[in-house]
Image (cartoon, rainbow over the protein chains, first blue to last red):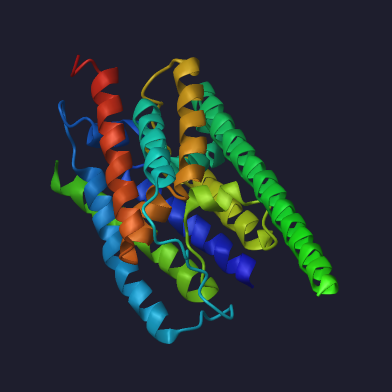
Length: 166
Length: 138
C-alpha cells in the first residue's frame, strides 16, 4: 500500500512538473539568467508548491502519525555545515550548466521517445555519481564504526587488567 | 510573463505540492528526488523509493503522449558539458542531502534553516553558472 501511494505521488509530481513548464530546461535556465532575459516562472512554481506543502506539513505534524506508517521520517540534522553549502553550490553549477535538476531529468527519461542524447548523458552521470557518493559514504561509515568498536574493546581490556592488579 | 504562463507555473507548483503532501501525510516520507534516487538500492525500505521513481517515469511517459511540448532540448548540445553537469548535480545533491524538491519545497515548507541556506546557495551558483555560460559576466 505504501509503495502504491508512493507511485501515485510520483506520477502526480511528474504531471505537476510538466504543467509548470519545469521539464523544459530552457525555462529553468531563464529563471537563472538574472542578467539576461530573466523569467520568474520557477519562483511561482516553488511558491505554489510551498503554499500547499507548508500547510500539509502543519497538518501532518499535528496528526502525529502518518496514515500508513508509525512515524514521520524527518531529517534530524540541524547544523549548517560546509558540506551542505559546498554540495549545494556544486549542484547549482550543474543545474545552471544543464537546466536539469534530478526531478525533471527523471521525468524526461520517462518520456523516452522524446529523450535526447544530452539528457541521457546527463542522467547517467547524475545517477551513477550519486550512487558512488553513497557507496563511498557507507564504506567510510562502516570503517569508522569498526574502529570505534575496536577502540572500545581495547579500553575495556585495559580497564580489566588494571582492575585485576588492584 | 503572460497570465497563462503564470497560472501554469502556479498550478504546476500546487500539483507538485500536493504530490509531496500525499507522500508526507500517507507515508511520512520526504518527496526529495535526489534523496530517493541516492538511497534507492542501499536503504532497507526500498519499495516506496522504487515505486516513487517508477511513478516519476510513468508520469513522464504519460506527458510524452498528452503534452509532448512540455519537454525541451537541453540548454547546450555539448555532451561533455552535460555529463559534467550530471556529475556536479549527482555529487552536489548527495553532499547537500537534497535538491530543488527536497530542500526547495519540502525543507523550506518545514521551515528548515538548512534548506533555506541550501536553496539560496544553489540558486546563487546556478545564476553565476548561467551568467558565465551566456557570457553575461567576464
